[in-house]
Image 1 (tube, protein in one colour):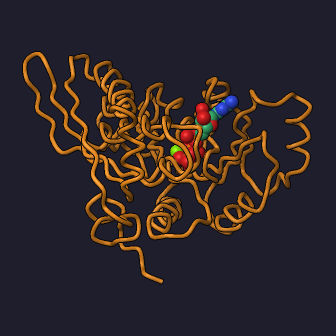
Image 2 (image 1 turned 45 degrees about the vertical axis):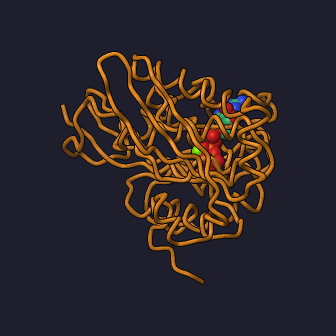
Length: 298
Ligand SMILES: Nc1nc2c(ncn2[C@@H]2O[C@H](COP(=O)(O)OP(=O)(O)OP(=O)(O)O)[C@@H](O)[C@H]2O)c(=O)[nH]1
Ligand SMILES: [Mg+2]
């Protein structure tokens, strides 16, 4: 039996469900997801190993037009991801009309000579009729495959995987079979805390935070984790801490519970909040938080 292996990028506007799809493909949480746009900030690899194939999916930040250096890094990462893959998946949200944002992304990949799939996500949100209307407005020749699915309800995921396999080259396995992702625990622990803050706060706060894991110490009966939450203004620090510390307590409890389940161990999670004015635009801070990969200053 021949073995196939290759890389697949998931790109699209923010909030189209790229990270939810990555998690559905791997049947576990590898990337955080929230109802708020611009959740993902890094290219996150998820490795699916099957009997006859290994597919490395790359989840990317949503491509959008906001200002600032953090946003520039995020968008650059998404565009960078498509250059090194065997298949490109463009995700759209079927419950929203195809618009300029989708068009800009499509234009950027349309001349790339690689298999391109249009993944029409969130079909659980529309009627069959609405899906057919969405499909009838597309130029079907623009894509090698068009696959409607629901990442959230895990509908049509196997069909997507089977179709991808047809486009992958014969190759050897890149990663060990038990490897699901390639990032360290420190990354995911910080992401889990960031997810809980994004879920619990509104307006500019979810996008003004960075979270860093500063310590992980594994003891026989408990894992001690310390994370720093960085905000841009003291008003944001006050929101995250909340009245009598109620907000930070809620965030920390939710994060700790998820970490305990993930690690199958008791976790002691210590969080603290510090203000670093305008960190999202300052190269040294962006570098410190891992959000500065050679973005050119314009
Ligand atoms: N109803 C429904 N909701 C979905 C589906 N897929 C994703 N969502 C929801 O859409 C929201 C955004 O999902 P994400 O996976 O974080 O979206 P994303 O494309 O990774 O967003 P960014 O990281 O910001 O670019 C979340 O609330 C998801 O639960 C789906 O198939 N159906
Ligand atoms: Mg995402």
